[in-house]
Length: 324
Ligand code: ADP
Ligand code: MG
Image (cartoon, rainbow, N blue to C red; front, side, top):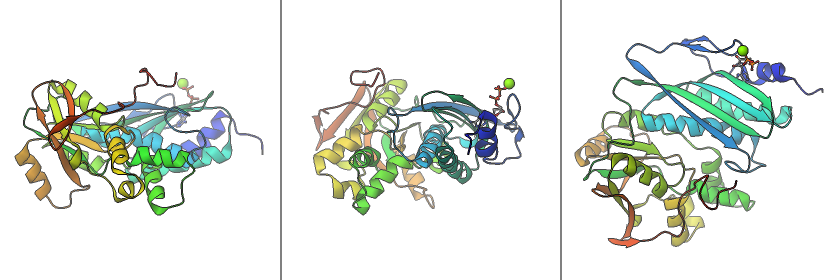
């Protein structure tokens, strides 16, 4: 079969992902036209995934598709927004129909889970780079920010930490032997954006962000934005059964504190608001207090109250050790 051209690629794989009544004009024209309901605000975010930087080459195309949307929906979750629309810019070395079909299937699977419509994009030849923009909606004045943390508030995280970093290491090591390793690998390949939790937090959290670069690195950003400091108790970190099974205590704590890619939410909240949140029916994901906000700067990790230092920081694209 002859490899498809740009128009055929769009038509075959990307014209039909998600349908919404508020898409007045979608894929096929010069731009999309989207209807924002009165009283709501548009929340927009974009993330680029480069092969060998953000995902290893050889990762299944469907996983690349899922992840490229998931990391963006996670940003919307951190804002308290409900996802609505997405655009996709694909740079491809060649028109590999098997890869495209897999990519589109993974992307569509997550898009359909959250009722997100793909409304436009760009398709070019070049190194494998996937850029996804996600747009969501949030009620006026209800969006979450990084800047509202106040001394005395609890620091809380959703789900479990460190799994995705351990999963990537397992994937690189050719894992798949044990069920635990497979569970960890899936946390890397199929992150679950915490949309429902973000929606709940809108009216009770003081600050929130998603954990993409590692807990400590990301919490430092939240603290900087809020002009305060935080103490974390490493003994309180929520660790999965799988991570506990596969890695000894030092390793799993390091993964949980510095490993990226978990896409959990870290948020700050007044103690009484957290109690009220926990008392609600059907919290969408477990939420664990791991520390407290105080006056000052930066994040201090403590074991039994004693400050500990970490051997490595989170990922910084332009920092020492980053791939060029
Ligand atoms: P233009 O040259 O006017 O920017 P294109 O020929 O690049 O338009 O794209 C044609 C239509 O297909 C546009 O509506 C564009 O948004 C859409 N499109 C292109 N690539 C993608 C993609 N990878 N996913 C979704 N829509 C796409
Ligand atoms: Mg045009």
